[in-house]
Image (cartoon, rainbow, N blue to C red; front, top):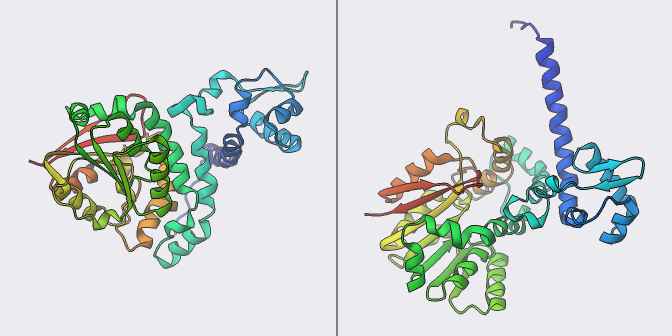
Length: 357
């Protein structure tokens, strides 16, 4: 055993880094509270106000609001005027913290911190004994995913994302058959169905709650061209049935992604297209060092995506499976052409357009 010489400056810098990480984690919990209670949304439209005024406007308990504000002020998220005891959410911060920001709203991401923290004991057990934590241990996960994806899909699905596929908008307008794999609460399928009434849309998910939500939304919108059903994508057996199949950030979550991709390829008709949206990353760890969300995404993988797959005896692909492995698996599934595209302002996702010859 050798003793390495300690670099005091490096040690002090790392200690500061860890303190920053701890503060950031706690601040994320307060940010989640601000999002869920509507405090950010309300304060964005208020003049500098006291804690009593903010509590009265939001209908929340003043003592809790005041303590929350203190954390936000010391976290440099909300500004404080000690002379007047007033608080202000700067518009530059509101642009990243309010629902009005649409896809730019980052506050909703903070909700994942507490969600993942709730399964820590199960994850530690899996570290020691193998296996995984089941999907049922995450009661809010689908709702959070639906909220996050809706912000993006409401803003850009029809006008920006779908046009990435050459000629698909014209085909949708004429009328084709579309399947959304892992549809969650069905919002994407319903958005497309509303925009393209001549086409027919199906949404499959293994969550009964998600499928019920998709049906309810379709009913409230008066859609007659959608159908949703509870289906494990790994059991998909519908050869040559669809002209377009979509999968929005769901393939890496599958217990058996290789089997799912093969089934998707077989379910496409000649000339059909598979639009797979998944996390933009490299399959090589060292190439993700500058990814703005790499630590968070590896954490989400450890605490959800990978472990849920392993709990089902699956491959445990993980959130950050990366483009190289994605291309490999698409090729193994039978796709002979794979093109990747990006959407301006969306650093999180890569858009794969895959076809068979």
